[in-house]
Picture: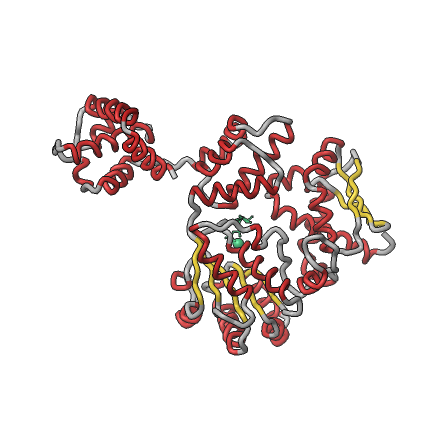
Length: 473
Ligand code: ADP
Ligand code: MG
């Protein structure tokens, strides 16, 4: 390093690179593998990183080095290689201190950074140049071709594609909403990439609602709101992620509303995401809600088993993994919360098997993920079972408790008892009590009967299996 400002720039690049990597690999992996790394110097187009042990060097080299290189090249195009060397005395506290320095001066530091164009394979130069005008960096993994489309997201996907490919503003705003980890940020990034790939001269601004608020508050403090407004009002496409955070903050909301109106009036495209529909946004004024409802509102639904399986297939192919299909089916069946968790689970299993040199099997998967699996094991109640089974066989819930013995109600009741035994930890007498005060021998008989029927009647067996899956999933 020849000067303090170069060193400062180098360290701020490292800060950004490692922060990006952290977002990709998660907190735990970051703490274990990246946090202990120290960015040492930059010479002759080579970045040198120090790690505390040989073991760490090998692990980081095998798992993160390529990505580190890509990310660093995205920050600084003169960087050609990233090298790891062992420095046993390295203390992770040094790193902590640097982190804190950066956090406190973060805004100042990042303002000095001139983010330069890299020569990454996947992104062309003009697109990268255009990207540099975007406030928040886009993620290269979040493109349309990496987005797996299925029933729950096909509408949102189609809407996103349409907006990205349209030569003029079609739906304004496009409002994407859905639960956490279902692909909203991925789709927004994909739209931005697509727009820039089609026309790199367009200005796309992508930022989180939190960042929007933060910048607005800072502008207020610095009495610089004119610049603030100009910055947003001169873009072709404005994307704000997670707008639910704007709710309740009146001044920011007001400003957002004006910016929004000004851009719409000028025929600029606006794309927003939130975890709720516009009408359900809390603390958001009615006039803003109705404005948000004016464009195209597209929701992403909870994942289905089929979509989860397709996503796992796509990801393992990309990772060059070829686990037994059973493993994927198991994960798709068990990790039902969202795609982020599903990805996390897959990465964890892959990293673990690689680290200890074991095959990726169903057994190792269960072992590695035991804590996660426990959390995902929903507790099914007997009431839920009765409701679902009654719906499925088209009988009244009250028939679960009634004394009626007609086959049309007795059989579903037996199925419900059977499932209660399989899916809950209730004892036979407890189950009996919940079914109109029946005796435990009645429940035992039901379990035996259903088992028998399953063996002989495949249609019945499928019915029971379907119910079990619905209740578990
Ligand atoms: P959200 O913004 O809705 O909370 P993200 O867009 O951050 O969710 O998605 C979480 C993770 O899941 C990301 O790594 C993303 O790439 C991945 N993901 C979500 N949906 C899909 C999909 N349909 N195909 C492939 N990856 C997906
Ligand atoms: Mg998001």
